[in-house]
Length: 216
Image (cartoon, rainbow, N blue to C red; front, side, top):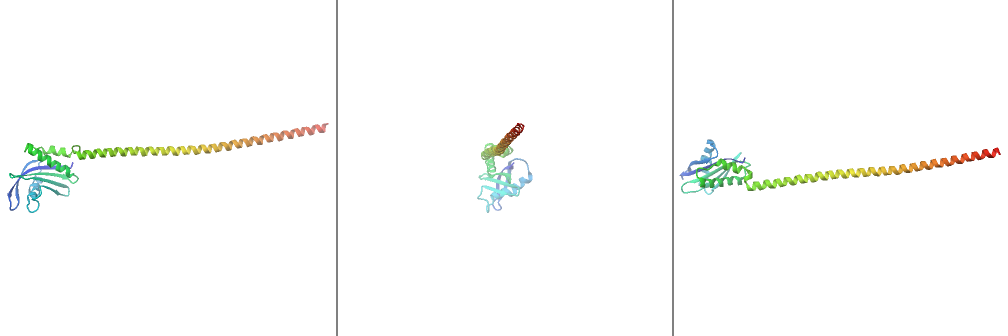
């Protein structure tokens, strides 16, 4: 939540000498006496200080933890002051939009303004067109990132398949070379065996022929 407090007050200048102003709170989001006192005595008087801030109808006061957004509507009957307090991470655009809504609601319904409802509305990012558009862009970006991750993951799997295919091809080539070597080894063995059989047969025939020659 960025907006934490809002207040509408009427102010009538009591003395032009010391810039004192009589403040009357019309509506606020919640009753916080200390915070209201600070706004009445310290914040709003800065908007009617002729020496410093009299030319400003809008003012931002910064604090360590909060920012004060004040708008002054001048009137001959008495000025109106709209005050919004937000955390440091609150967006200025949303705070000023809240103040504009406060002004519209006040002029339409006078003292029946529901500031709590307005604060809830403006704190909901779905009700802010720019924030809504930003959320939509972020969603598209996230989808794109997911798709890219899927693509990279698929590429990784394809790379693994390519490595596996290369490995299988190398194994097939090794097996093929081994098969050729085995085939040649078997052929040489067959040649050696055939030659041995032929030689053995010739020797046997020669021995038989010698025996017959001696017998005759």
